[in-house]
Structures are given as C-alpha cells and as structure tokens.
Image (cartoon, rainbow, N blue to C red; front, side, top):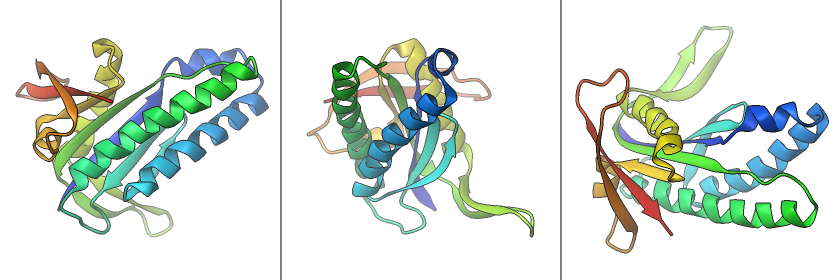
Length: 184
C-alpha cells in the first residue's frame, strides 16, 4: 500500500523531565498529546504509536485516500500551530515551553499486525517508515521544525510554502534523499 508516515518528537525532553517531578511530566505530555492527536485525526491520520515523548502517525492506512501526503502535511502544520497556542498558555503560567520536530515520508509500506499470538500491534513497516523517522531526527540538524521527502513534496499542491534543502545521506540508506522544509 502507499501512504504517508509522520514522526514527531519533543526537543530536549530528557532535560525537561530531569528538571521536574514525574507527575508534572505526565501532565505536560497529556496536554501536549491531546492537541497533537486532534491535529492528526482532524486531518484523517491515525496515531499508530506513542513512544515516550514522540509519536508515529499514518495517513492512508488502514483506510486509503489519494491525498495522504497533503493531509499529513496539513496535520503537521496544525500541530505546529497548536504548539504555539500551548506554549502561550505555558508562558502565561510560568511553565516550560516546548519545541518539536516533525518528519514525513510517503511511499510504499505494509500495514498490518506484527508481534505474537499473545501480543500484537497494528503498525506500518517499510523503508518509508524508517525514512520518516530519520527525517524527523534530521530536523535537529536542519534547524527546521517540519521536513518532508520528495515523494511527499510531489503529493502537495502549490499552495504550500516549500523550500528544497538538497539531498541528504541518511544512515543506512544507499542513496541521498531530497529533503524539503515546509513553512506556514
């Protein structure tokens, strides 16, 4: 199947968690994830996994739709807007503000259950998923909050503000990948 995968992660989360009580950390994450989940589901995505302060969402699975790339980027832009509102509320309360990185890749993947008979999860597997994760990690180096691959870029209309950053060689890949930054 073809779809889009979005990975996101809070920047410097280890430092944040180190400097507050665990109860404060879980409250912070719950408030943050509530906004992020809404942005994803409002745009047709499915939150597939929550891993600490990060998450993986899929667009186009389990139900396929042609404009999965555009919906994934719309969700990411909405997530960044929601983060601004979240941070304004945090600032008003004298609390820590958050920063995040989002990576999106589009392409072929397999969607289904993986695991054992006693414990299985629905997920997507494939190079597209791995690439989305690598792109999210690259947001730290690129100093851009939202990066996409060329296949996602090809699925976008001209109304999106996109800047090509060039070809990037990611760990484990044999060929460099064209990466684009998306702005509001």
